[in-house]
Image 1 (cartoon, protein in one colour):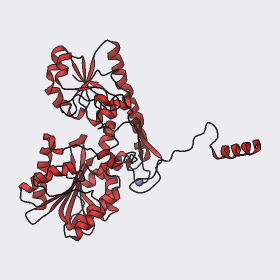
Image 2 (image 1 turned 180 degrees about the horizontal axis):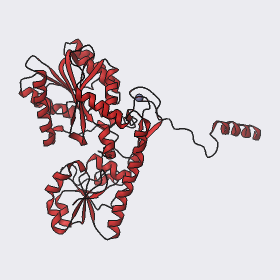
Image 3 (image 1 turned 180 degrees about the vertical axis):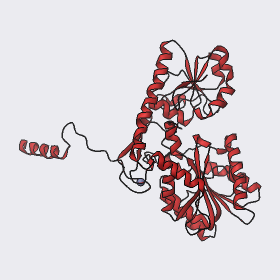
Image 4 (image 1 turned 90 degrees about the horizontal axis):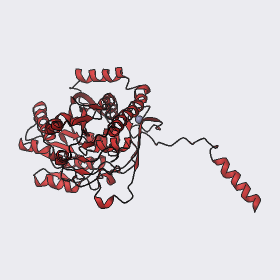
Length: 435
Ligand SMILES: [Zn+2]
């Protein structure tokens, strides 16, 4: 008996790594090309889902945290998060209605006009949008008499689109749905996707589906945040579990090329901290060659080193230093007896605060204009969210602006803060007290 026990201990020990050594973690394989993932882009630790705002009665309960460990593929250079949480779980009670933002609607209206002119769209054309949300974009094509079809899996959001007259299919876009639509003869002159590519777990199925939806001479446009801007401007707080992939132009081009599509043009647009709008066509539709600006962007990315490991390796150190600078400022301010509060409750704020470990020990509260967030608490950090008027009641010394991309707009809306000597602070690209 005792001999057998000793024996089994030895067997078990021989299967374990030696004391002090650790087995290499399995990070899975690249969602674009299948190569094993080994290289860290940045590790932001453990974080809750950034849109899971808490009600008061949830504060005393367990809260799920997931890794925010971002990897980069050494073959195709796709920067990516594993699907730690399924899209279904994330978007289960997804209540984001695109039509709530005025500046976003203005961007979409301009896009619809530009595309109509550039592609000569008319009453015999068809525009299909994947992830068409509440019809915020397609409404502008419909107003111009151009037939449209939306694809939107979130039923409550799709219902709003249908109510405003935008025909919408309530399913996930991919090869299965696209094959069915193509068989029914429903292919498009323009296939559009805005801010959806980052949220797709199976990018190959998604792009193969785009190709099936496209008429032989049709055009695809896809918009996504530009990885090079994220790195250059240190926008690590735009990383969250809902965003599975972070694309450079080179990597997006490689993805489309795998599926018989050619990216022939690109525009840099200001939305979401700096995005790319790429234009693609069938490989066989050779009338449209690569534009000068697309070639120039390729060259810029190559020159910046986006096809070399060093480019990605430097990012983690830059992020850690940003954390130290922000904490240094907050510790100094609190030691000096100053009060600090937040402005805004965006998803990016939650990544930043959880990564830096900033709770009510540093920020008394934050404020947000959205009535849906007021009275709730930030996920993970449990910082309370009030209406903006709270700032005028408590007259803090510093206001930390979490949606730094809107800082000019916020500083002008909240200019009254300066009356009692209050100052605005932005955390990104690095902590700065605004003049
Ligand atoms: Zn890859």
